[in-house]
Image 1: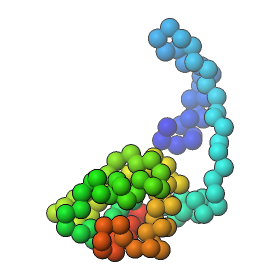
Image 2 (image 1 turned 120 degrees about the vertical axis):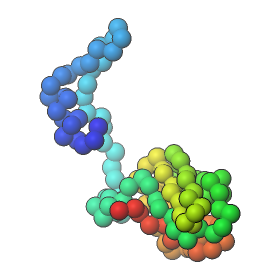
Image 3 (image 1 turned 120 degrees about the horizontal axis):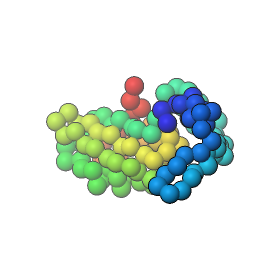
Length: 120
């Protein structure tokens, strides 16, 4: 859903859905706790996507996937060679926040200083 309001509207309108020959019951899933640092980052605009600036020439998706994979599952990596930038899309906000924090403190993964920034 785009927002929790959309999900709530569906739950209010229908308690179940019919898919093929099965009736699916609808209810809220159990929310998992969010660490305060992650909640603060989300409040400041954090998403699952990291923007990478100042990538060295020759940086490829495999190298970035290897550098960012230790922070959590990576959904996709994109390198825009014409302007030395890229994106890493994580499967969770927590992983993106951990990666950004680590790179902000330590410097880059590909030989030059890389400062991941969350896209606006």
